[in-house]
Length: 317
Ligand SMILES: NC(=O)c1ccc[n+]([C@@H]2O[C@H](COP(=O)([O-])OP(=O)(O)OC[C@H]3O[C@@H](n4cnc5c(N)ncnc54)[C@H](O)[C@@H]3O)[C@@H](O)[C@H]2O)c1
Image (cartoon, rainbow, N blue to C red; front, top):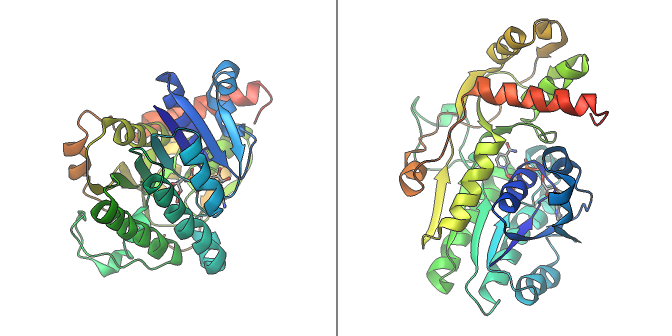
């Protein structure tokens, strides 16, 4: 078996690759960025040396399809994407990357000449804003009213995945994280909580650019969910919500201050709410993939702060 990971140099990608390497699997990385900065923050140099990095754009149809076919790929973890702010400002180029990129992966799986399983990152952004729903956890049967181009792109990918299963038998799982946090999370509208922890370790001021609630999901747990869905091998075209721990941003700052006294003097928050409902029912995922861990927020924050402490001591922060 050989795993093709797109967007592997990103936050979730680095943690997924680390965990695939820990399992002894053969990983081929495809990303527009070939510098494994995030991976080298969490994995040993020996582990990083085992990965083959291929530089390229996910919207390059011929290249993506050729790699999946010619490199003997059996499993694809598709993470390459541009996030909400980029897509909102650049819908055409965002759509090329997020929608055409995903179609390339699925066409590559279809035309590989062998069974190829696909797990891809959808997003909770497929849900509309809070006021589009009643005040209750949303499950996968509830209607989607995405309020951003990014959310619409992710919704399109879920639909295309369904059609690739019904028309071509390509099994897939689409996963919908909310806010992933942990070392390596430094891009996107919801990177604030992680960047705040990094700023506290550096002793610098930082403002989280959103207010209101977020569902924070620890990156190590999220990576394990992606990898289990990839390796467990159940058939069909599935889509699952993810859930972590919901917290209001001002309460997050209080929690951080309790863990690192003085943090509240450095960290503030301002701005609007993330335009995505935040109460998710993740029972369907737990039923399909039993035994997944859900790290308590405080424990995930402690681990994140400790890794940042270590990187700071090593002069890598
Ligand atoms: N981080 C979150 O909270 C969150 C929440 C919901 C969904 N997601 C989804 O999870 C996936 C990974 O997110 P992340 O937080 O790791 O993002 P990230 O920005 O850290 O990583 C994205 C990676 O994709 C690569 N990439 C971007 N454009 C590319 C292109 N045109 N061709 C090839 N590679 C390209 C980047 O170089 C980067 O390594 C994305 O699909 C994202 O939409 C993330």
